[in-house]
Image 1 (cartoon, rainbow, N blue to C red):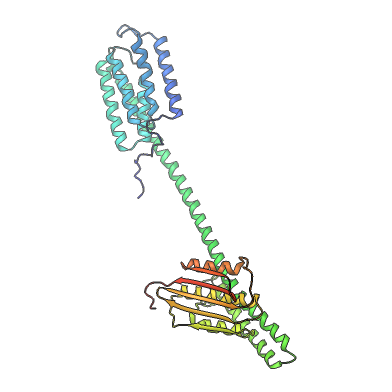
Image 2: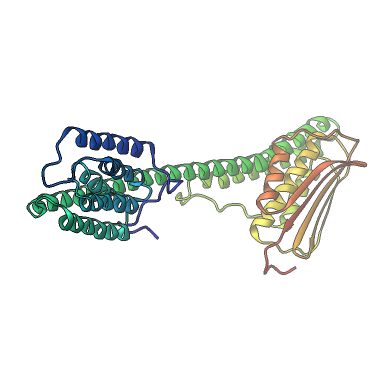
Length: 388
């Protein structure tokens, strides 16, 4: 909820510690008050100068040390000094200035309660001065009222200006935060598109390269198989173009020609495995009757796709085993490449993308060499309400 226009501004740390500016202000006014006592005569109606008058000349300005951190205390101290000074028979001299400055500060930094208390304290101070002063205070009432109004009005104007500056600074900060949030969203979208392009097109291009290589090697000895390989290259190439159109559709969502985004299911793993088999690799696929929400199914498909692509890209032969099992509230994907021992791979785009997909779904992924080959093992949570 936004604060009301009269809400008090927060006090700086150390409520009872004056600021450096307040200290200089109190010290300067104290020096002026003492000089006023020394240089100007008191008048026949007032008591002669003594230690008490010097003490009060210093105490009045000293109250301004707390004009910003505790403005009502400063107002009470300055007003009390004026009343005590009048009761002791001394002329007011320079002591009214700290009282007016304190009143201004109450209206500048305080809320409704602070302003109301300051008004009461100032009125009591004025009344005490009028009652106890030995001169002719009633003749000074117009000037006193004018000073009172000036302190109140100027304090209110200063408070409004400060609130406007704070509001403007808040708007600038909010605008900057919104710009940073938009930039983060843009970066996340770019990273998502980069993962989609790498996982989908990277897979199909690798399969096409392998199929073309197989067709070239057996073209002379087995032209029928070579022709089949070339046909598979054409099929996979068309699939790659369709997948590219789906990814680019994200950048042009209002284009009526845009295709629907690819939403793979576990059943689509069969077609994925057939592509790998067309390169000459033996692939075993085992899936249970798994029904998954769309985001989880997409993550399973993409992780399996990347794991299969890495298997045929980095190893020339060996059986590849793919298994997808539903275990309660989790789905487990395991891709094992039976191959010669391999070193721990570097964290390229493929492994980074697989781990990121698992992380975004709230799951975990492990990838590394095992006895007899290389294994990718992912465990992803399944949203509640999806039957197991």
